[in-house]
Image (cartoon, rainbow, N blue to C red):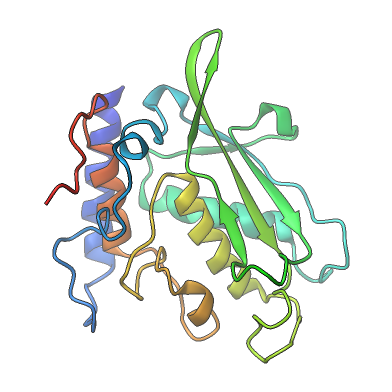
Length: 230
């Protein structure tokens, strides 16, 4: 199963590289991935990854139940964010479920986040927990339907996110739920700048996003040395 997972990741990366030529950037990466742009402790790389036997990942996406734009199909929009990753890495498959208790990844809606926070979405890395059958993982993705005061595109604006904006935010957060860190490259979907630039970019999953996912999931499962040591 592990061998097939890694092979699938490699095939997906090759396809992505053909589809997305590398753009010219002000930021010049030292490698073709950003796994070490923001180095993490060894345990994060070792344990905060989905196991091959956990696939397909079960996802619960409710509809928000407060003052949302009735013209947007929120559940379908977030489902599309998962499918964007599945299309790029077909080995990572997702199954939508009707009950949160059955899910590996749960989506939680907020009208907006507190004014003390700058994020428009949050997600947990795949977090290990123990069951009778052994170690499994779970994650939560928190999404807002509007920016909190002072963080909108117009100062003080709390207009609802558009479909394109919410799709970009959700795709970014799904990346975290798969275990991806932030990238320093403003062109990557996992860019740490996404919330400042979401209105002015057409966000896509880039070859470096794909290469980083491959790098993460080809690390040894019994990793003993941090991959970013020098």
